[in-house]
Length: 604
Image (tube, rainbow, N blue to C red; front, side):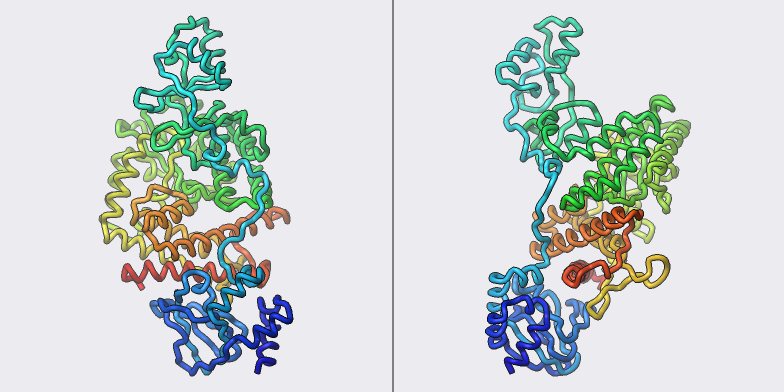
């Protein structure tokens, strides 16, 4: 009997990677059992006693709601997902026909995982740690900033401010109120250009030359975020804030000592582009940048953030060029992005989804200005490769170019009359992020809409139903459900069947937990921290999302390297057996989380 087991193990991965002597010992330790047709090997929600390897027969894996996930045959393993997590089975395993099994007991399984890296690599579905290169842009401001920055008041004299900078050998001071609130910043460049060159006396108040209400970022922001704002807007120091109070300062000089500024170089070029043609020329650098960032093993959320920053800069430059061409706007406005740009998740292929919120002082005749502005910007984005939205969800459509009061009515109607169109529109518009204009137009709208929506159980239920329409590409026989016809036949749609289901789940968690994050990964992390999703399920989903998102970027980088335009359709043949197994398990996790949220809402 052990000889037959030894032969089977030696022909099955990852057992075949074990030293021969250890494999012989293992063959004598595993248990052999028979399951009758119809026998439940384990139920979802019960403790797992072993990892199971099928010798002969067939086992069906089903969700707690009874939905079939996988049909397993000889040499397939099952039970590892629960064993690697908390020891509880997330699914039910049933023998469909008389089935012979090998059982690796839970203690023995954990011993194998601990002592043999090949076992850990095969059964651990979390994202492996990878060596990073060009790491500066991927650090957070909290990692590099100077803490406890020096300050002065707006009433202090320029002479006292200059002496403080000289004595402490710094190039700037933050200007704060008596309560510690940030009012402005004054730099050595301000003293030179605005004070000395203008002939101001040394007793002039700091308030006369400081930069008021400077742009700021939280300590959790990436260094790349700060650098991109600096090169786009022409300043050299970034105040770092924590709950409304200054926490630190980061200077451009510090960052320029390091490498990894290629995305910043593109943004700098865009910031000074004279027309849309020049912007398009610089945006063409994105494919090469994506290939470089993926090749440097950057995490997917870093790659997409840096690429989205370029799209943001292109949009803001086009807004400025539009205003130069059309004249100043008749009333304040705000340009917002939704979709992947709104979530800061743009890749090598993106369309444009945008809208305009206009101040309620807008008169009917003012729409001609904003229609022209929207056309100018959208045409420029299309020229740069951000093609027009097929669903016409752009500010060029009058429907998405409205005063603030109309937007409030839109969201209220979607929330209280959540028909099919309302669900689709709300899904897109809950991913809004301001890009350029008067930011205050969005602040109250965002907060009030989130509170109103999360408090309406019928709307939340309909949003959950809508989120379940995108399903992972799971084939029953341990394979993938690929596109059946057309130019992408036999390929996996990594966007609509891979990333989008997680995006939809993240949006639901944000809605239910009133989370202000828009980025999908940030939503998942906030949902785990805030209890909007179980810690174990949330971590599994986060790992699954990371794996799929990085597979998508790796696919696009491979296409660019081979001289092709990037897309979202990957042939499973490009994957090794190892990667194919892990990717499929990631899709199973998503299916499980969809089933869980659907069951709780009565849609499954």
